[in-house]
Amino acid sequence: MSAAPLDLPCREVVELVSEYLGHALTLEQRTQFDAHLETCPPCTTYLEQMKTVLSLASSLGKPASSEEVTQELKDLFERWHHEHS
Amino acid sequence: MEPYAADLATIRALQRGEHTAFTALVRLHQAAFQRLAHAWVRDSPSATEVVQQAWLTALESLDTFEGRSSLRTWLYGIVINVARSHARARRRLVPLAELVAEEAIVGPTVAPERFLTEGEWVGHWAVSPTPFPAPDAEIEREHLRLLLEEAIASLSPVQQQVLVLCDVEGLTGEEACNILGISGTHQRVLLHRARTKARAWLEQHLSQADELP
Image (cartoon, rainbow over all chains, first blue to last red):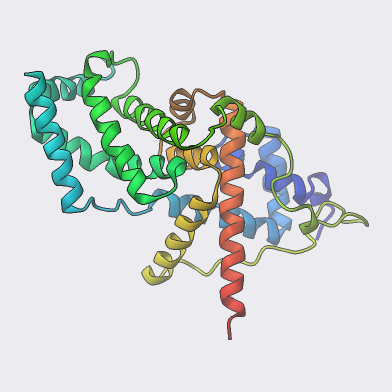
């Protein structure tokens, strides 16, 4: 490992991951962060894991409502409309 | 064109009693309603009850939708309010602002013992993260999704809400702030804490699976 990672310890890098992924770091912070990653495989792994969490979260299934629930909601809408028309 | 013209058109369709508009809305938002409700009431039957109540509240409040936010933002605010009222009726419920203030604390989110506390490499990993299995195969990805569902369920209600709104439903931080009535700083801290805990949950449960005979 080079001396570069000492500029930003891993303990601090992990706290910047969300802002890094959200492009919310200043240019200086981002440069430091990227320099750190180049020489730190564990932090690169950590970043990949956070990316996996985000990717999985955005792909979480949209469980289809059961027929029963869907029908109950349709009935609810009909009742509501009937009472208000 | 008004920013939320399509949403206002949906409102008018609902007011005319067009059930296809309601069915489309349910199809779009039912899953998010269920997740957001579940954060506060914690069991599926109660969450379903909350969701039905929230839809009814939304229908009865259509006249109050002014198009100042998106319909989605407005609806999610309603379901969270109904869920919190439901939870409040069952037990003492700490005010949201108090919960946020307690949890949105800036500080370490990863266990301090994971890092070296002395020597030349102080602050660097003592126990490195183990890479997750590559989620290429659909079966592995489904396993990770199930673990993430468990991880989300293990979070505190406020962390669940922020993570569901931002990372599952894809809302912006600003939209999440508007729905929850919290500051941008609190939203960012809560989201980071929630993601960090979810990652740790996955790491812990995947390593336990590796240790099985």
